[in-house]
Image 1: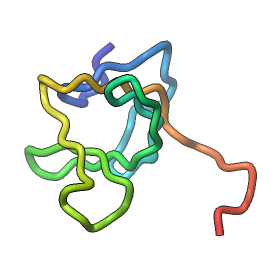
Image 2: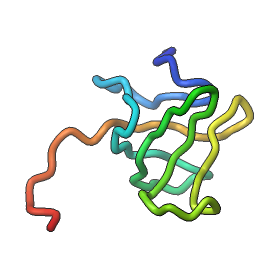
Image 3: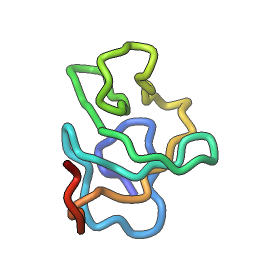
Length: 79
């Protein structure tokens, strides 16, 4: 299914399309991780929120990245 996110495939039936700065559950190289999806100009990437450039996972057509879903609710306080 095409969600308008270049180089990313979606698993199952995601209800929500990831928007800029969405928190997503992603399969990156056979490992499930929670990352922030960021779209800037012609670039899309995943980040943990760190400002370190090496923490960024760039998304392109060759990426083996699958979005499992968009986080919409947290059942406990995160702070």
